[in-house]
Amino acid sequence: MSSTLVPANPSDVMVIRDVTPNVVTLTVPFLRFGKIPIGGRGTIIRLTSGALAVFSPVALTPEVKSKLESLGNNVQYLIAPDIEHHIFISDWKTAFPSAKIIGPEGLPEKRQAATDEKIGKEEFAVVYKPDTKRTTAVGPDFDADIDVEYVDGHANKEIVLFYKPDKVLIQADLFFNLPATEAYSRVPEAEKPKPGLLAKTFMSAQKVDGNGQKRLLWHAISRGNRPSFNESVQRIDTWDFNIIVPCHGDVIETGAKGIFQQVFEWHLKGKK
Image (cartoon, rainbow, N blue to C red; front, side, top):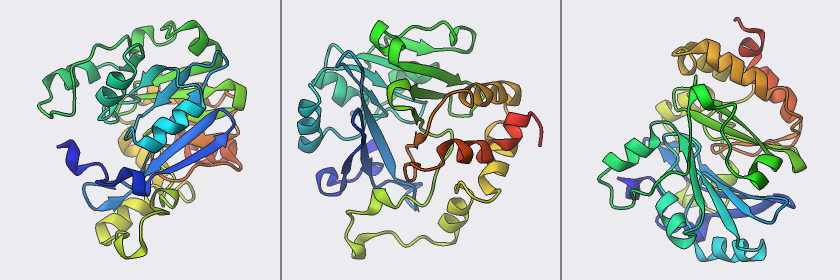
């Protein structure tokens, strides 16, 4: 159930930070499988129009509401970036009923079938699919500021955004940048998780240095449709980003393009 996946006291542990004047991150602790501290992150994007787009919404705390008000409080787009990151969509849609919900194929059906009381049955305004992903329109102001790549070759069906005004790449599970230092920076020392062998093994395979994550992406994550995955990664590489905001792990604010190219080297070349 969703209650086991989110912190009980989000106001006490969330880190709200301006990465750029128009990109704000909402970072929280999160344990994958209840054991692995990968953290979680939502991102608020202020478009040139003044409208706000929220990528992978997290808990809508009083502090988040205050931040939204400081940004104009005009939430018009709610992006569920893959089939996993959607638990708080209903809370945000209730607070901002005019906002469009955006997500990948399969997620609307998954939410319709869910029995978790936190997951509603709201309609999606935009659903990304492989055959229409290059022509899908979200909204004039959104489309003017943001390039989108639907990585349907990823096991989780990832929607990746490039916010052009501030040169920021925003993604959910395309790749991780562990350890999740920022996510646990407000957690009392005595309450921080102590990773066991399983957690340490997983985390070592989700770093941006070394070859662990590179191997995982090539041999596991992309194996269902590697040609499509490669095409998506190669398109993302054409974007002129200098910051990467992942949902799991720390934000990459230095050398982001080079790190992306190192992690996806084999996909960019089209072969291992």
